[in-house]
Length: 114
Length: 113
Image 1 (cartoon, each protein chain N blue to C red):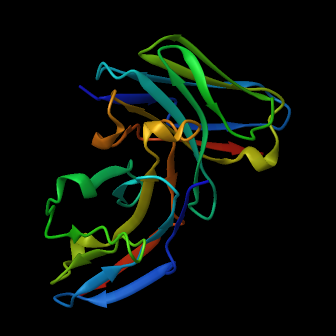
Image 2 (image 1 turned 90 degrees about the vertical axis):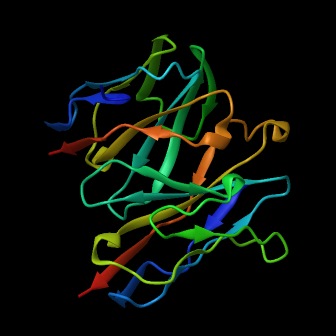
């Protein structure tokens, strides 16, 4: 079974402050991890994926297999970062029953105050 | 051009009715999905089709029936709607390698009264 946990439902920071959205996962195989963002009343958008090791809109996330975590970080939060953030896990094809299944965490609502 | 499009965007209907939500993708993806986002914003997979073949069917009431006439379309038909079906339903698609992530539609907000 695959599971994603985002322990914080709500996170508030002030503009310019660092922000970290936590994500922990449980999966026996080799996971592929993603962060998705949903701005108010909009569709979910892919923010970044661990396999590309990229930085999007100043956000980065590092996969820590030892701690089974994939926390999302940004050194200086902006007001336009306010949104719902979802961590998601896709099991590898070799996992068989997990093929094609993206499992989401509960989501964290980030509010950046001016 | 919208990559994954859903219609309608909003749907308000009475309990007991039957309704359909349509989804189309023009990305050439092989796999399409339906996700349900409940009032607490929790996203849960319902169905997945790969090249018109059902590959994922989570524990969803059989009042929900997906239909994929071709790999670019995945429709969701719901019979005998109940109050608890009120949610936002998202369609999504992905290519052969899910490592590139999913592309989501804009969602259909279903309200059952």
